[in-house]
Amino acid sequence: MDSWVIAMMLGVSIFLGAAALFAFLWAIKNGQFDDEEKFLNAAKFDGEDELNDAVIQEKKRKDLEKKYKPE
Image (cartoon, rainbow, N blue to C red; front, side, top):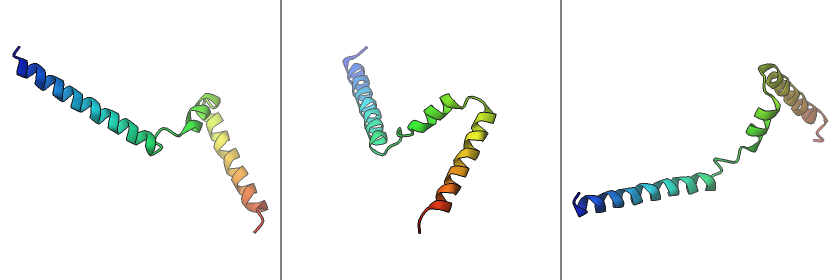
């Protein structure tokens, strides 16, 4: 291979790596990976029935908070 091909491949790979790093840092800054409850709930509620029960309980909790919330 000629040296210009190696230099071009090196330049393109550095550019693509920098773009991927920039995108990753941007995603971290904007909170794209902040959904901690998703993984915790996935471990706690394995089946569809357990997940439906959790949704119902969450709705009941929010309704109670609205009902007893001082205005």
